[in-house]
Image (tube, rainbow, N blue to C red):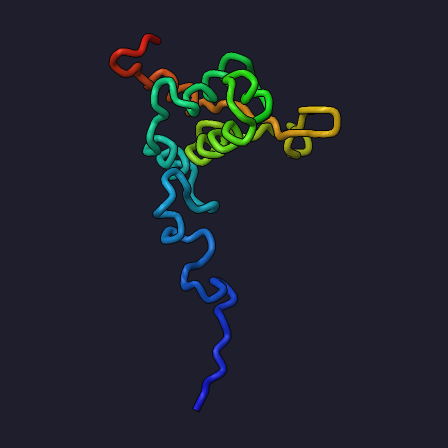
Length: 144
């Protein structure tokens, strides 16, 4: 006798509900979207700091020194590909060190031109990101 089995509408048959703690354990710095603000801050504090001189560190410095930028602009500042800069910025966003800029009135994400027919989302360093810069220490043999 065969039973009709339908996947759970909540988890789609995976057994893990979207945005559940179980689905975020393997991704440092990621937490539930409905988590308390203290949990969000703690996730950022517990995320590993970028290493001195790494691309993530350079992205933080670029945003701190030059203000809000697109991934394309960050890539030009740090001398890497646009895809690498976008990946590093995503990692920093996951850790709460960088955030997308939003229009204060509408809440829409801000964009800026990155070429003749191209736009990119504008990102900025957060207070947590500025705090992280002060905690990143040079490695032995590398001058600040």
